[in-house]
Length: 233
Image 1 (cartoon, rainbow, N blue to C red):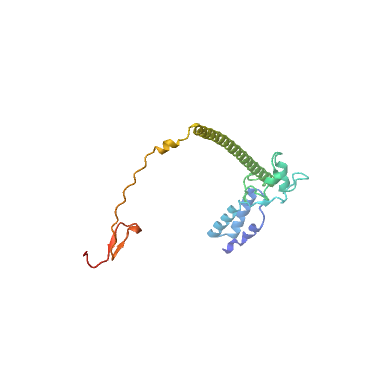
Image 2 (image 1 turned 90 degrees about the horizontal axis):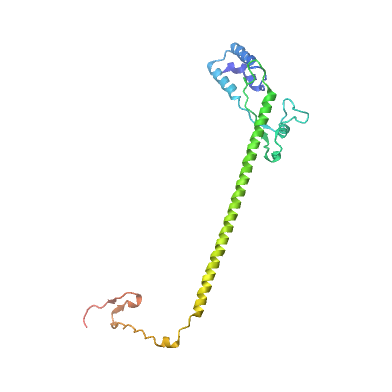
């Protein structure tokens, strides 16, 4: 692994803006000089391929080339590119996610240097598109909530109307019942006196309990327990 010492300074340097042709030629000559082993080649290839991912920048980071006298940071660039109907101050995140860029990028061609200004402009355009998408989703959510609230209010009003109508019909029916009851003549005392008395059923005769017996009928059991030694009279 000692052969990788020639490539370690490349990890400490920022991404180059030179043409891919120059970078490939530089790596080829450096490989001939250092003669890395197979494991070092795999390690270096993985390191350079993983450099294509870029982390987010803070909005106060400066642009490589100012777009205008008053546009020198990513925040000012976002503010300049945002549409007028977009609430920029409410939806703007504290960071901006830039577009991915590899250590040796062929987007500008093989012999052309990398266009950093175009890369920053593409990153700003993508951030503005994300803000517009979030704004549309929030607006659609607010409109759906408004429609749901209006539908709920209409349903409650319809239910209240139906309940008042039902209560009105119930009150009318109760009033008619009371009126008909008031118009009916009450029962005369003569009719109540003519009612025949109901015959009372004869109670069964209860046998007396002898000494040595326990009557369980008061406790809900129709039985008499006999604790005597003999059954004689």
